Length: 443
Image 1 (cartoon, one colour):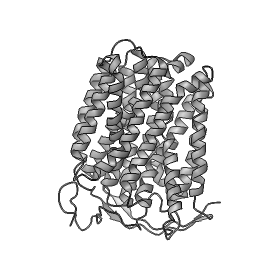
Image 2 (tube, rainbow, N blue to C red):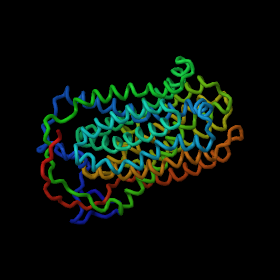
Image 3 (tube, one colour):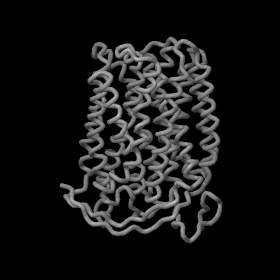
Image 4 (cartoon, rainbow, N blue to C red):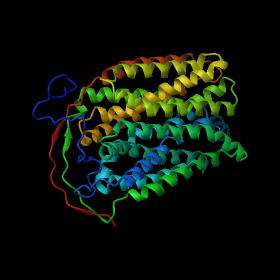
């Protein structure tokens, strides 16, 4: 039975053949610079270690955002930052997610995806350490380096899931998103106690998050292909993705959910502290909210993949996200725990389904890699405007009417694109064969 494309018609002959379940031999366009032919499937122990290594890498891809938000008042006072400059400081690493994501396919074709991830985990570790050194200059430079590393790894990991876990994409997508938010929750809850334990040294509290990044880097070392030579094989070229309406609907969905996600990481703690909640209690509230996100992240893709389509599921999780966040801003203080929990469940499900939709709307791993680059590159690039605009609209001590109005508007747009992108379709693309490539040697 032929699966309809995003325009509702059967695909033309020129379009790639679509498969809802990818073959085990599918390779990933971002990874196809690796050995040829593809190695046989790893034994179960190797597959488990690969899954654990991938999850550990994912754990470190969000720690830089809530750790900064938790210490933002202290950072503003120590560096004498205005509210507008503080908005740019919180936005800069998010902006890097969009600016550097397009480099992922090129880097992976040159040295291999596994090597690319390893090198960038080193860069991430250095960038996180640098954020706590050198005052404002170190903070900005470290944020750029860490944000660039995260941007490229973000693009490569969904394709790895599509290639190496073809029969468990829903579970792995959920674990991946859960690890992202598990790292964020840990950073949100532990950064303030670390700062207090270190005698008020916010610089050291930020820098210490380089330790789990370095551990993940060490574990990923064992995923590097053995041998110095990399055979670059001919791979198909995916054409027409940027003209596909469904691809743009998925991208808009990612843009809007990114606005919410990074606003929570960067601004929820300062908002709650401004409402009069003590700093340690604020850290616990935000941490528990993000922990609930991790549970929802695991469950959401598993539920969504069993539905005939994801439209109404998307609308439900968007509603929980928006209502919960507005409750945190406007509801009585004694109910903030409840609304933070509602927001956490909604945001976690929203984040994971936005990532899972890249896989669900792709016919194979080639398309998943290209779609991942488009959705995450544009999504995170424009999504960076969310925390920036929230920071510009926010008036300390002046209420949250403008911030709340903006978040409601974003939520309404999320409902629209969540419904459109949730329909059971695959992106329409044209696949063209590529010319053969010569081997390259990695010293």
